[in-house]
Length: 71
Image (tube, rainbow, N blue to C red; front, side):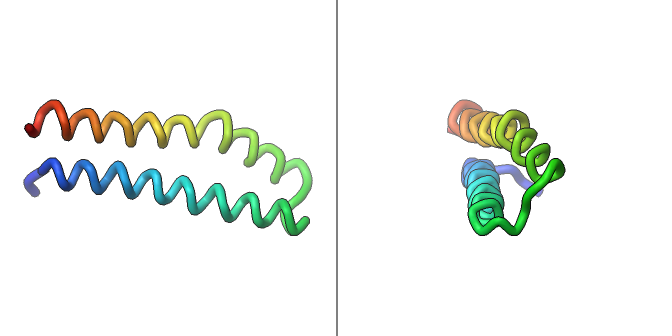
């Protein structure tokens, strides 16, 4: 597989899209009271404090790599 600027940019966009979708789903579940308790709280905390930041960082690195190395 050949990695192109478009491929890297799409991968970054896909990460951002997946993050947005999962954030929306978890918010909807909590707002409706469907998902409560310790497991829900732990997931939400870890999602917000760890995973989301790492997804954004990875997307940013993919974008930066696309710009810097594939001009």
